[in-house]
Image 1 (cartoon, helix red, strand yellow):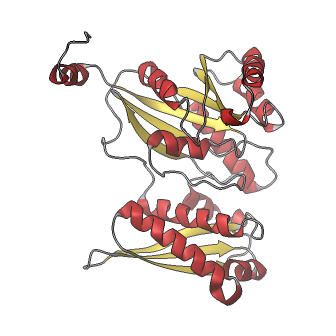
Image 2: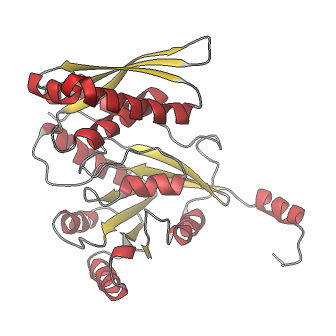
Image 3: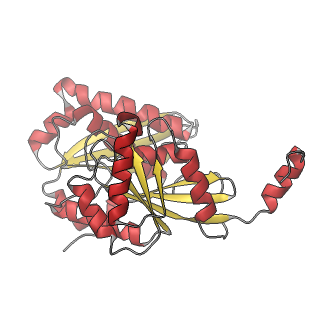
Length: 313
């Protein structure tokens, strides 16, 4: 393409170029920054982010358009040593997502390096045959020479197609990675409409947003034994939407934590969640939160189906 082409000629050339599409699975240890990176690459909030580990429980697909390619990012649960049934379901889901993808993107927290779960994941990737790229995240926190050593060590274990160094927080290095993916994914029609950014139903996304606010508010006090479901969704004549959600916990003591003194905690969670859901929907939202005790919900197959996880026997 010559430099003296007109804008119209450039647009025509772009429209006539073949389209590419495919699925890219992000895998990594807990808190490597997968959800932050997916939101950055999609350009919108599709996956919840929390400083608390193991926040993502099921695969969330974020859809990005780059040049003539539609890239479907699969944000998988963090891979770690499972202890409970829910843990096993999450780890199984993560590896299943990797094996279903066209390209696997291993995200490593550069500050933590190849310690613990990251090393375990590297070894596990030897059994997965799809093309793999290595992405070192949080590069602004690590010296360049240490990044090079980390990249070399990882590539000694797995033969990665490419290595990228990025900051999910600032977006540094992300454009080069998107260029590569857009060129690498198979030629073919797009899987989703151009304006769709996620395959997560709005009812479920709204529940995820509330779960994020719950974690952000109570991460020191409320354990992982909590789950949010959207039970009612009513579009009203005045253009607003009424949403009722239930926060399920396992014990009465956890219910008291979720409610807070004089209901302060649940009010703060509701306010923050309503604001974000309203911004996404671009319409007024009336959000009503209820907290219910459901003992051992982590052993209930129905709850796993609601989360998009397979119930491990």
